[in-house]
Amino acid sequence: MSYSWLQAQNPTIIYIGDPMCSWCYGFAPEITKVKEALPDHEFKVVLGGLRPQGTETMADLGDFLEHHWKEIEKRTGLPINYGSIGDDSFILDTEPGCRAIVVAREMKPEIELDFFKAVQRAFYIDNKDMRSEKTFIEIADKFGLDTSAYAQKFNSEEARYNTRSDFQLAAEMGIKGFPSVIVRHNSQLYLAANGFRDAEDLLKIISDIESEK
Image (cartoon, rainbow, N blue to C red):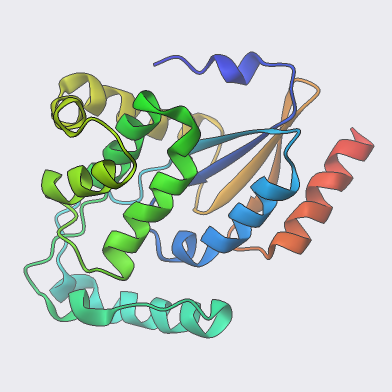
């Protein structure tokens, strides 16, 4: 997997998250505002891998997640469908959702953040099966991607490898939690956020980093 953009001269905003991470869902409107406010910056998504190959079910995690989801609703005003909380057969494996975004990025790089948010919606609003390729093929179709090619890529070993490469890159950048934002400025990486931040605060931090370094 090539990350040649890490060597680019342009200032870059790197968003590290997982589509099934609760606070990443709450952060979606904020990181979108940041991207739109900095059109002269490159913008890249790195999939962090919250619970790849996870085996825990909602029976194990439901109470924990429900607490976080209520906190996110209160903080952000975003809607959440709690239907999956009561589904004890639901296994929280975040690798397929991350892989779905990696494949979409490969096919059409400019949609990676919007596709990320569509995968979030599939989980947090539509309560879709997040381990089923059908869920992601339906999203790919909405983005105008060739669904046959998408399905083939999604099920390939190359896509699994490329997804693991994203997880590894996040770890190599020292990311311990999601959502996180890194600014690449003057060939150096600077941590701008580790955890939820309002767009206004994050833009100020980015501005401070770039004016001082």
